[in-house]
Length: 316
Ligand code: HSE
Image (cartoon, rainbow, N blue to C red; front, side, top):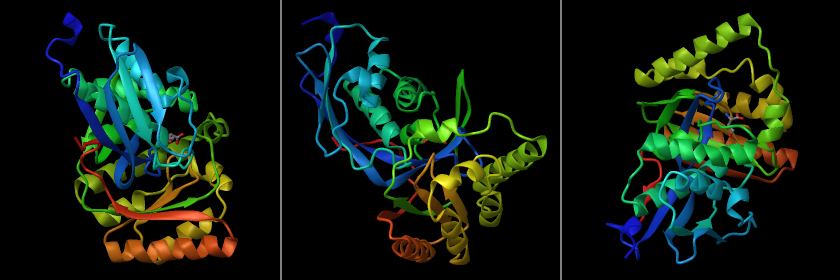
């Protein structure tokens, strides 16, 4: 047996679930995100006799299988660059998180792949390094490295990305929160949603924004639902991006009237998320969302779920 494989179980198959994530958390563009329990991607990985990375799609999305064009492949390539060569991986991906939906589909693929491969390698890399590898998938998908989907997907819960160069990730405690998500069936590419953003902000807007970010973090840590609700306000990104999402203002207004604490665009959209204190409210919010999109005649999909506190989960 080659030394590279010393101590590894070459016949092992690792199966994982990689959760969807909500990036930005309204006011924290590129620096805040959280994981949810539904939906999630299913993946399995094993060592392969073939060198390099073999990707098998087990879903309807026809995503590229060339590793360098696939977000999971790009993340694995970054990981393999830091280990002795000689390994091959065979990765099977069943995506349940629709690409381009705004709930971290590419992050789930990239993060799930490196967490699963790391288990085959007897967990040689820590979570921060896994985030670093997985960000290469985000770079491929959106043109920019950002960790606000990747970090919560790997760590679970709410994560604050204080910095990506160098990486500085803070896992935040949060009270019980119910999450309602509506995905109007249109596609918004993250790269497009980023390209329309203004590059300069007014100082008065920046002051409002960092007040909200600090308020949201304090509200989460102190389980202060009112403070969380008041802080879910974005005066910089939302006014620009929300025009890409039909019904956005109405969804926000009706959800809050139904008792939601607040919410906004999930990642770069088109999904919209709302946070509620209890499940009953989250279900009423779902009803409001459905009724709005039915009236608009726009196909949509909804989820009522909770925050996921464990991140990528091993199934075997
Ligand atoms: N923070 C990123 C953005 C998340 O809003 O562009 C993309 O999912």
